[in-house]
Image 1 (cartoon, rainbow, N blue to C red):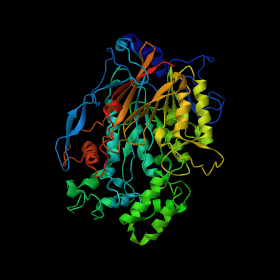
Image 2 (image 1 turned 90 degrees about the vertical axis):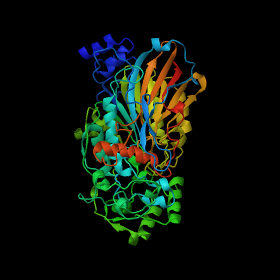
Image 3 (image 1 turned 90 degrees about the horizontal axis):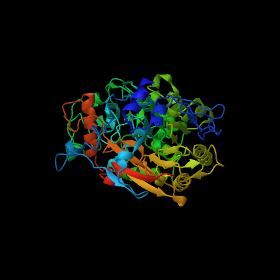
Amino acid sequence: MSRTRSVTASVPGVHRRSVLAAAGAVSLATGVGYALRPTDSQAATGRRAGAEGSGQAPVASSRKAPAAPLAPYTKGTTVAGVAAPRTASGYRRLGEGPGWQRVVRGELAAPKSGRAARRTALAAFVQFTDLHLTDVQHPLRLEYLRSADPHAWRPHEALTVPGAVSLVERVNALRGAPVTGSPLHFVMTTGDNTDNNAHSELEWFMKIMSGGRITPNSGDPRHYEGVQNSGLKLYWQADSATRDADKQLGFPHLPGFLAAAIREVRSPGLNLPWYSTVGNHDALPLGCYAHGDSHLTEYAIGGRKLMNLPAAQAKKLQDAVKNGTDPRGADFRDLLESHRRDMRAVTPDEKRAPYTRADYLKAHLDPAHAGLGPAGHGYSSANLDAGTQYYSFRIADDVIGISLDTTDPGGHYEGSVGTAQLKWLDRTLRENKDAYVVVFSHHTSKTMTNTRPVPARPGERRHNGAELVALLGGHSNVLAWVNGHIHKNVVTPHSASGGHSFWEISTASHVDHPQLARVVELVDNKDGTLSLFTTLVESAAPHRTDFADLSQTGLAALYRELAFNAPGANKALAGDPEDRNTELVLRKG
């Protein structure tokens, strides 16, 4: 209890009950309107929250508070500085740039003067999203779409693992929240943690988050086998002097790059508890095809890889993926069969097999990947028994989190939710009407457009983003919906009848530039309003790169610079200033 007392005694601005709950020091009596006690994580099983058989997991715990009074901690955030180009054209080198200012947004409530002196902190957490940890040698990958679309393959994809480890290192270095200075409660990753739905990638993700040694290689353990040593000018041949398409744009010749990219990486693991939300790339092979085609599994683990495709055929395949016309991958399988003779030999590897929903849950429940917890990282054995991937959990005494599963198992990369999940969400919000709520998902409201029935549940209706917005707007306790998927920073106000409103916070990915995560702080302004502060953070890697430095840190820095220069990349993914570092004001419900 001494740690709890030091927090509440030294920092009057930190809400005492939220700190007690975060430390796991308080239990609520029954009958006060909470479905969850501060030590519970409630799996979505169809039962009422708190009913017999519900899954339980430890609450997210704050790190130890500093002895001195808390103060805003902006070091390492984009308030202090952002990577920026220091050359004007061609391949642009990065260096230190000025920080992004905070923008106050009052569309949903007028900000009142003097609130900074009155506010008390309710909670603070970090969002990761769209890490896209990529097994770049995977035989099913669609790199050859680059013949029709330059950005269908990224020159930096081999460095997703050291890049993600550097993001973990950044969060570990944050000594408090950027505005209130209060301890950070947890990290939530909002999906697309992996890229190809491969067991190899899932293992890397679990070790990055919880700590361990990762070798980002599959197939032949001795050397890389993929498009970047194929000799094909379509791809950046970093190790060779081949005048490929990327080198013509200024990309460097880096001898030893591929050997360094598949070398062992060490992750310290997060020094905060972490929770997990599932995305389409986690649930579906290649993020777009339904499970069930044994031929695709055979290609995934087999010894043949297609590396090149004529532009016309690549465009046809890309259109089919975008439009969702082949959700089960039958036409894709036929395409692969027709090009079997064009494939190159690679080393087979069973670790590249697609993982199932149950596999994803079991990995999170594995004690080997517990890290600082909670056990299951939000998921529980009840999820495994029910076949669900959504749950609720206690953030603080006054705040709960709800993690949704917005992927349609029937295929396609856009999302939706089924009726059973929507009813569970509505019930959970009603049963926790006396708590503030933050909802997490992978898909955004505008990308939940895939409402085709799930083959396993053909009679269940699927619901789109507009229906989810309407449901959330009908509950006065919803403060925010935090998501990813679009790889862009976008903050959207949502108003509903009856004066209810909430903010939708969509955060850029960590695979495309500008490679960001986001800190979110919830505060009570003590004037009838609440504020949500959002602050973006980059990885811990230096902004400047050194082409001779192929160490783990050097590769993480190179990961950022290559992403900035990736041909065809969208240069607007950082969003506008009002989508980055913000204060989002809300009326109390």
